Image (cartoon, rainbow, N blue to C red; front, top):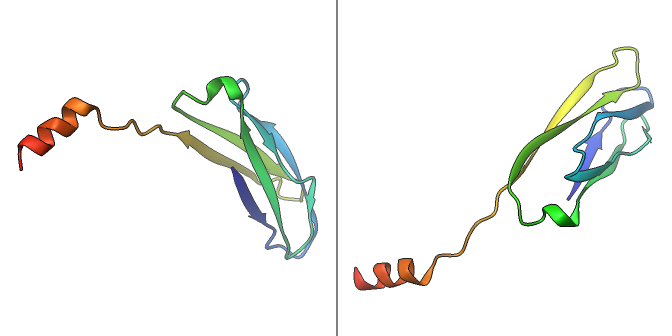
Length: 94
């Protein structure tokens, strides 16, 4: 999953990942974002977690005088297809 981070300040900023999602995903952040520009990051799920649901988050820090921190929620929900018995019940009710 790709996402965009926009630097709305008048200075270039660096980004530092403080907490990731170990065992679930790799977080790829841009090293720097120029003033007024946007850059893309990416979350790559580990292959062995693709069948699981989860709710986690990661936190990064902006390298300016404020040292602002942002925590980003990451949720994976898996929609299960209707079983044939459920589909049969719906058809019978018509």
